[in-house]
Image (cartoon, rainbow, N blue to C red; front, side, top):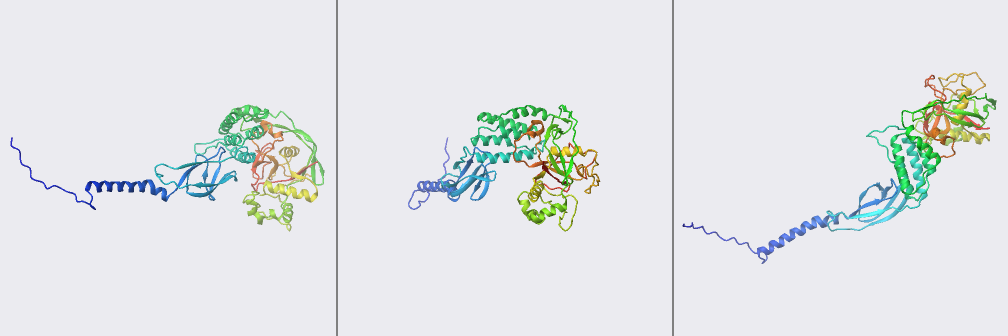
Amino acid sequence: MKKDKLPEVEKVVLPKFLGMRPGKYILIALVIVILILFFLIGILPGILNGGRYVSFNSELSNVGIILDEKYIGSTEGSRIFVPSGEHKVEFIKDSEVIYSETLKIDHPIVLTLIFKRTLDVNVPVANNKEIYQRALISTIEQIEAYSAITDYSEFYNYPPLIENLARDAASCGINDVAEELFFISNFITSNEMKLDLDNAIKLFEDNNINYKSDSFNNLYSKLDDILDSNSDMVYLNTINSVNLPKKENNMFVYDETEFTIGSDSLVNIFGINTYPVKQLVKPFAVSTSYVSEYDYALFISENPYWAKSNIDTLIQDGMVDEYYLAGIFPSVDNKSLLPIRNVSWYAANAYCEWLSKKNNESYRLLSEAEWEVVAASCENKNYSNSLIVIDNDETLPKGVKGCLWELTSTSYIPLSRISGLYNSDISYPTTDVVIKGGSFINNSTTIKPSDVGVIEKKTTSEYTGFRVAKDI
């Protein structure tokens, strides 16, 4: 078979470049491109943005990080890019700096875009009891706030407060938390808080930290029933008898008496406020009526710190809220006998301290139990439905029922009546206090002497006032 003759094709010859054959300069070009790409990807990012990804670690919970005087996050699983150079880093917990150091970050260059350069920084805190004490106070404040919530949703979660405290105790070398855990357990008002307590107990056990006491064991054994909406009723089974007081120096004096506060109550979260508790009430005296606007004006005139004009400072100091003395203008030139209101628990105590120094006495607020004793003596008096108390009876205190809720010296601790803490000397700073008696806006048919109102110490209300008492 005859083959077709192919046309002749001119050979393609690549020209030389700088005297080099094509294969050589193409290879060089490829190498240059590769080097440029390597520089752009593997070197330049490190030159332009040198630094390391730093993991800040702490065995403590909720430790904040301040880098060069700027807050950048917490130690909880954080990895933060820190530029090359020297940096001042501070670690804060509960608003206090617990550790600081100068952090020196080198300038790695090669392949930093692909291989992240990392550094671990650990916070040394072993055997630091001061850190633990601050964490304890902070935990109590938060637990107290969350105890007001008895039901949580998927949109509002309860944080692991007690578990975090257990972690802090282990980190700080604490070996006994029995007293504080019993106190904290008095704020368990939801199943979420109970689970948090159980998780904390596991941490205490894992770290050989004692958390048990007879008081705690007794309360813990009741928690499931307390959190159960179906529970038994506890009956007062006591007829309180109170002798009529004697009037001395414009105050009513009450003798020592054994008195059961509260009323028939369910043994669960719905009955904790009125659960009956027997009290031995020591002799005391109480003022005939509320502290008046004029009384408070005299106090302010000698204590300008508490003047309405100083409200910004008072708010900043946590003594009052923005409604302090709202709508009220106490004046020594206007002898108003209307009860003072829109004052905080702190303001009421400051008034008692001032009056004590002025009269060389020891005035204070009534306790909840004392207030119930006074209310029992005034059982047959009418409920006051206005700020003006119409009462011609001079043998008993005026305006105990109605008029204004009365501030007391008793801290509000939800489970204290059931746990026995109510009669205990154990005490930690708390935010809320008990108020008693109802006010002129409440329904007189529904307010009972055993009812418990709750108010934050710095909160002011136009429906809350106070009267003074003293020991005898």
